[in-house]
Image 1 (tube, rainbow, N blue to C red):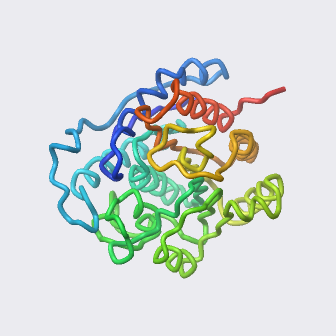
Image 2 (tube, rainbow, N blue to C red):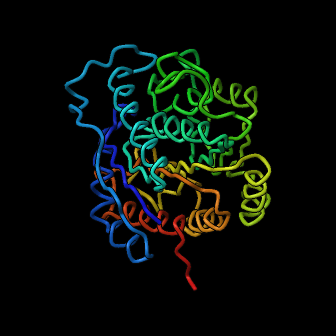
Image 3 (cartoon, helix red, strand yellow):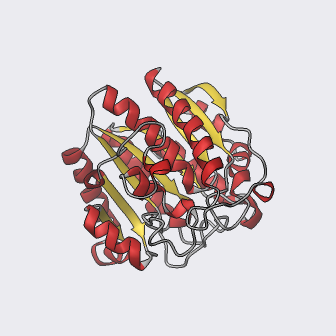
Length: 302
C-alpha cells in the first residue's frame, strides 16, 4: 500500500500545550521503519503547515479560540488529504490536537463525495468533541471539531474546505467515550451518532463491542475514516496526552480494535492525535501510537 504520512504540529485547539510535538515523537518512535517493514511504501512524508507558536497568536472568539489559524491550517490539511486519496494513497495524519480532524474529515469527505461513496467515521476518544459555541465550557475547538464536521456550529468550521456537512452523524460511531459535557451529550443524542461508552465495554465485554462496531460500518458505509485520540486509553498505557482520564481502554483493547478494523478492508484514512511528549514517560505513548498504526495497516501477531 502507498502511504502518505502527514504531520500536523497544531495544538491551538486545546488548553494544554505540547501536542504540537506529537508528530516528532511518533516519528522518533520509528513509524517509518515500522510501516515499511510491513511492505508499505511511503510515497510522501510532509507537513502542510508552518505555524507560529500559540503564544504569539491572538485567541480571538472566547467560544472558538484561535479560530482563524485553525481554519487556515485545517484547510491546508484538507487539500493534502484530498490529493493523497485521489492519488490512491492512504493518508495517515499525525497530530497535534484533535481540532485537526476538521481538515482530515473534510478532505476524506470531498473524495468520498466525488466517488459517490458513503463515508463513516470511527471516533475513538474519551470525549465527544461535539460541542458548539453555545454549549462549550472551554471554547477550545478540539471540543467542537466533530460536531462541525457533522454540520453543527460556526459556519467557518462547518463550511471548511467546501460548504456543507462533511459526514452524516448517523454514520459516526464512538468507542471508549467516558467524559461528555452536558450540552454536547444532548447534541449527540439529537444528531443520532452511535456511542459505545466505557460502561458499555464493561457490561458487554470488548469483543462484543468490536463486533457491533464492525457490523455498524458494514451496514452504514462504503469507506471509513479512523480518528484515534490517545486519551481514550487509560493513562497507565498512555500517560502522554493532554487530558488523561482514568478508567480508559487498555492497550490490548485498542490494538484489537485497530486489527479488526483493518480486517474490514473499509478503512481508507486515519489520524492519531493528542500525543504530548511533555507529559509522556520515555516516549511510551508515541511508541504505542506506532503500534496502533501498524495494526490498522495490516500487522498481525501470527
